[in-house]
Length: 424
Image (cartoon, rainbow, N blue to C red; front, side, top):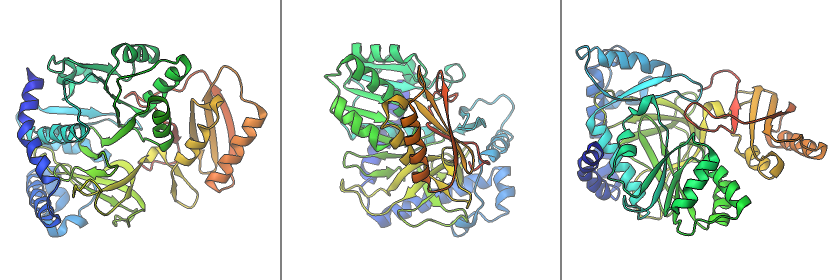
């Protein structure tokens, strides 16, 4: 039973994480430095990194090492594979990215144990257990060969129902209502659809205790709507194909999985941003010696944070996740603007609830919306004024009515999409 083997293999790591999350700062600093030194040593054995580092790959030079771009991953992958005989099988997973640029990542067992243990720490902080009735969204890829596919096929989770994110929404809602789960793990965009159907039909989820969300940016309007309709809170997390990066604890703090990854929030000159400022998320994996990612630009923007959470955990904090670079608006002066203020405003108008904001150029925007009939002139005027006020620039704007708002190949819905340049 591969799933059970993975769970048992991660159990000692999970027990260690329950202790390390309360370490004193100095002990954590020493641990991170020790693990980072091991990763740099492992990376230096890979020809791609050996050429890239040019002999300078130690702790003192770490902050000066070049960042790894998504376009570099295929060469790194090939370099790792070159060290092994042809036909060697690797544990791997692929991501198409928000702009369709595929990348395959290779993992060793230590990385996967760390990922599963960190995920367990997040879930169990909310009293979740494998015996609790749970609806779990997942993204099936490559015929079910991804590392987490064993969990979807396993009978260990007898009370967990796995559901594809791309399944028909009506079928999803019917299954959720019939199962009456205690917990739901779901993309925010799917959750919005679920709430809309429940609101229209008056159906209830009487046993629900908590919703786990991830893979998309979670905005406060969805938190409020979930609280009002279902009477439960959302526990967010920040995960990716590459690693399990951070999670929200019951006290609200967003904790970096510092035993698993090192996260830097950098400006365009590769300098750390001040707390409260937005920057690029740069990740170094600390447990994957097979194919380490050293200063990898994962493609997201987030806000830096500091301090200690009220929960008492001493894990580093990360601020709100702004989203993928491709979901941010690039303005004429080079600044990136978050679309979420506009998105929240658009959600105030029920007639345009299903929508997508497109940036065609630095001063031209399109609001695509799905509706059986055009919106009124009054609503169009209101939308136009809100775009102007929120972005604070002179712009051209138009509405585009469509039959349906599509999703990305991984089943994610992007409420905002910039087609200006390539700032991912």
